Length: 395
Image (cartoon, rainbow, N blue to C red; front, side):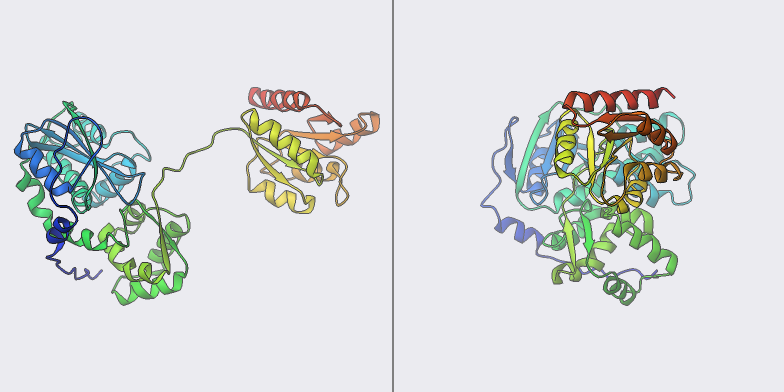
């Protein structure tokens, strides 16, 4: 792959100074505002010990953390998305390693220290890894304009590998700080998620920039984009750097062909999912309100003909079906669910008006687990759902 030619911008420091009449006097408590570069220079000169937290002014979900001791830099990282940076950085450093990278973790620093304890890294290798982690985070923090920060005195790391002065830490990354400064109007951080309007146009730009866009590369690249992965994730998957991606996408972002979405941790909703199939919107409203209030996720389907395909893609924990629908009766739909490999074990509760012998025979033949008599009270619905989920969990 041909390396991109990166321009050198000489006006970042001057632009920084134009944004602020001077550095505010910072205090130990509360959020103040300062230019990160000037602030770090002041803290190292004053031999500060503790943690500096710098807020990304463009993205409320992203903070950068710098740990200092007696004015020396011990480590720097992000307050969020540690696993994403870890996969990206270790992937760059050890492309041919058999190291199993974690998908999620609370502390990248502790994870790297644990690798040292397990003798995966030597002491010198650990220092090298932590230095590069620190410098990558400093690039992002120091390329920000005047922003909020907080100081947490005496917040120290358990194991100390680094004791870098400011020049040792920042000197080798000055140009990268400048490059990211110039990109800030389009890309707030590598945690942002690109939303691409026209994949073909992006592929054309990458090809023109001499990226080796093989079919295998493009398949991986496009899949990451469609899943709204952040730049760290995309860079990890494609073996590119976040800076290469940012520069390649910049003009399309300016033109509106790519929208950069803010970073936010995607929360996993582990509540049981109940899917209800019913043409009656009154029933749907009662079911949705009752179950959501009681800690369940609820999806509603009003067209029974589209229900089977939708159910197969949702992985429900329980299916609630109205037996009396005009387009398709509930017994027929339940029978179709039982023939589906994805749904054959899912509990099915049928809402019926007449709980009689005929119903019981039809329900048994259709593979229904239980029935709920209409009209029903909210507590009746909850009892049926809880009972059937409990029985399923016990199997």
